[in-house]
View (tube, rainbow, N blue to C red):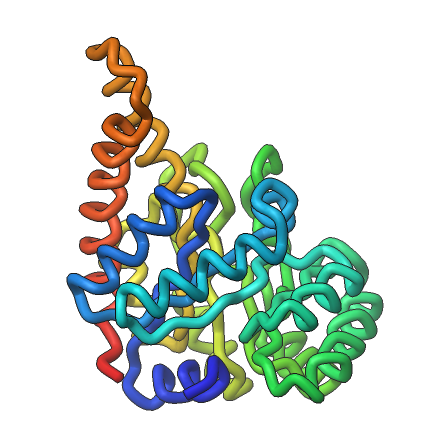
Length: 274
């Protein structure tokens, strides 16, 4: 099963796959342990900053080995690819899915860039995700720029993307005010196009709201901020209570907290049994 088939099956079963970012060995282990315990598929996500930090080949090798070692079904996805050049590197490195994010450009430029990536990815047979509308990134103000059903339909028709991240009230990073997803708008987008719909910025969104989004068309739920925040908060707490210098004894306790977080999150998306 490839990522395109995975998302189509989620559409049929009215569930979602949890797409998790990892940043180092410890957060990768946290994701994999939780997935193994819950018998969930994993969609491991890498951003440009994580690729720059770990190295492209090393990050991919770590992810592939972890998928094999933990015996779960899994894939590697480029999250928020900001350039065609980065997408090309990831395609050559064997990614199963790529995202091109030209959402901050005009509609026309977004269409042109996304369509180019779809054409590039075709020989590889990988899933292509794009973003339409304004989903606030770290440091940006929330609100405004929601995706419309009309633009979503036109965008998919003109680009041929397999998956579309939509703006319905979520944001990347921590929320400055309580998040509220526009479920009615999501349902309208879902009715306008059969493309796989993606929810970015799920960290901090109440579980029942995420489940409402899944019931109305979301088949991929991205989780990043809560993973690194959980690891770092717990690591900081441990370091204030010990003089231990062996990181091999300290880091696993922070990883345990990530496992607990993700077991809960996998339950929210209603695990897909493959």
